[in-house]
Amino acid sequence: MATDYQRRTAITRLDVSAKQSTLLSETIAEWLKGCQLAADIGWRNEVRSKSDLQSIAYDEIRENTDLKSQHAILGVHQAADALSSVAERRESGHEVSKPVFSSRSMQFDERTMTVFDDGEVSLSTVSNRVRCKLRLPSETDGYQQKFLNSDEWELATSTLKPRGGEYYLHLGFRKPIDESSEEPTPENRTVLGVDLGIENIAVTSTAHFESGNRLRAKHRQFERIRGDIQRTGTRSAHLTLEQRERREKRYTRDELHKISRAIVEEASSYGCNCIALEDLEYIRESLPSGKEFHQWAHRKLVEFIEYKANEEGISVVFVDPAYTSRQCSECGHEAAKNRKTRQHFHCQNCGSKANADYNAAKNVGLAAVRCGQQPPQRTGHGQLALKSGTVTPNEGFTPYTPSAGIEAEDTDKSRCS
Image 1: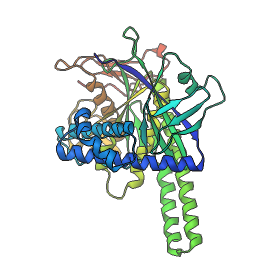
Image 2 (image 1 turned 90 degrees about the horizontal axis):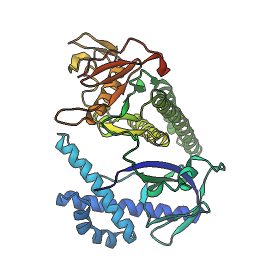
Image 3 (image 1 turned 30 degrees about the vertical axis):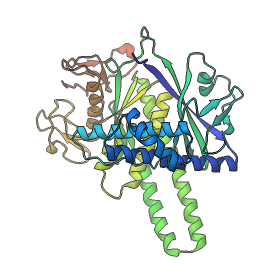
Image 4 (image 1 turned 90 degrees about the vertical axis):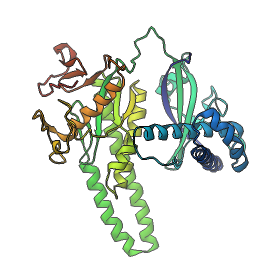
């Protein structure tokens, strides 16, 4: 029987030279090439299991890329995971296409990466190994050291990501789950539902609203300036545009960090051990054309939520957001007419009224709770966190007690079943 693990991630910046940076960049390019080759072969032959794909794709990757043996295998496994995800979407009735690998990141395991006691790491590349320093905090009890110096946690598959001219290593750690511990399972987790949007970039099932107004206003301002600068067409104008692009990206990242931190803090304050988010694939399909900025912002926000939640021991799950904007979180009735406007929800069945994004956030969370229930009886004690209490499908609404330290309101009396 396979061992179940608790997993954590600790992000560290690498201190690399210009020569090492070039070599890592070349290695990532070959990694993406290898992953794509494996995906193409798997797609063409309708193969998605790791072992079967490795048997037919490994040799071609070694012949057509500069990847070493172990990274060729890891690339095959990455492609197999992507192909399996596509197959699951197809089986759910969604249109699918062949996986495309474009995100500049790559995986390392115990054979391709070594972390030394002196705070340095050795990474396998397409040439010789790169050995560089991890920029760890000076505190000996810092977050990264908590895992690096632990006898309980072992190093697991990690991910290297370039960003803004720097390289960041997302160190993965794992330890076996103690069956006698109270580690949350899908059947008993407490979920915070989160709806991602444009007017409100994020809304939680506990009625925490994060407005997207500042980001939209800043982006519109930048787009106007971009048009003026581009019409100038001079070399100086081009340099000015690049400078403003970097400035806007820094501002947006700072805002998204603040929003993600607030969402994780919201989960912690309500005792949630799980955050439910919408699958970004479906969000991308639902956004109108020309919304590349919002797609990028959502993707970054999810990335920030994931690693911040991971640091707090909170899991993150993704659900299909289909119909979450049109379904009543109170009675379950689904109809296009339920959503009167972008902001207002009015159920045509039970008469419930709510902010549309708040209603959707509760539906996202309820979808995650139901996924943890055991068919066919659909049993389990997973619950959704609301502002005024919790709701468990088939069992109903339970208000917070005064001892919970949360100010209860009577606005949530969900009748979900």
